[in-house]
Image (tube, rainbow, N blue to C red; front, side, top):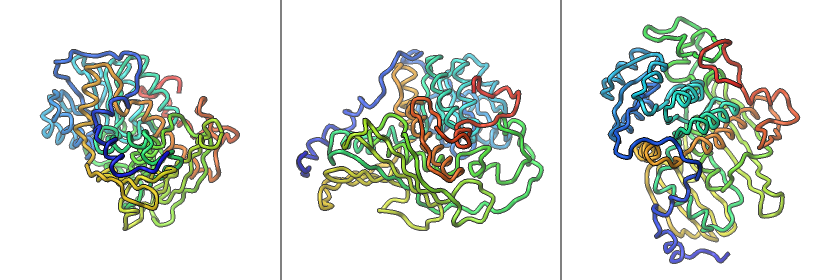
Length: 434
């Protein structure tokens, strides 16, 4: 391929976002509602992200029938913000209401898959925050539930609906920097120290039994709720599944890989924080995609995490770099991208934020049209699996071989057990055939 010039690049870039519709995944028709029907939605999870998600849906003219949270104070606060008809603690009250078309799930990670699967089985379309599942097995069960019930399931990786980022992804696919052989993504920011806090009684207004749900019951700690549940194996996926999965998803998208990796190597540990969190504060992980094994077909994705960094990397706090045979593209999901040709010649750049309402709009449009959403559950599962594999590498401390078809870690029974999770025996929300 010839080196790109600014003129040839701009000619290609002129197609704009209208040319990105082909990125939607084709598939069988989904259960759709009337094109002019105002959709009725229930919001499950009323933390900061849940409240932001509620506003994004309201900006798209939905009827907010319910808000749901195990914390009654947060539920009541969000009910007022979203002008919802009802505030409930138990999500089953939403799923039993046949007037509800869709749910938006912004709970702690351990509830994502159980709530989404129950919603699909109840005939509701689902918007679920990232990571789509707490573990690899749950992600596969979510795909099966979505397809079996012909439900739209959108994952909350909002970059997939960002016009600026979609243009960058299309340019990569068109060869603007040649063959993209390596993608690197980094989660570089300063997180808080959660301290050392012993178990205690749950706060007033929190139904801790409902909050724990299908996860194994453990004594309440102040760092579980409301903010730091993601730091615990029982409830979260660490920062690799928090901010990391956003950028991992972009890296996988731009690298053009649509399957799982076959080998994962890397490192994960706590280098900085002396506190209770169980996940690493530092990770370096390499995912290998062999293709057909021939030169030019293999791909590598690299994930870096330093959640103690008081600085940004390559101009972006959390970002991505795509290395091609004719140039590179650097981007930050919150700000924009720059495309460089040989010898670091800047060819083009564009700025633009992530539009949360646009991602909700894509989901709602899919319910009416029957097409697959920009961040379909299968897309979300492929990206979330990388976060899970990165965390498994950190927990066992050795490389992993992964079977992309069986979604199993081979030759390492200890690691393979972490593809799934343990549930609370007999709980009503435990997914079937786990």
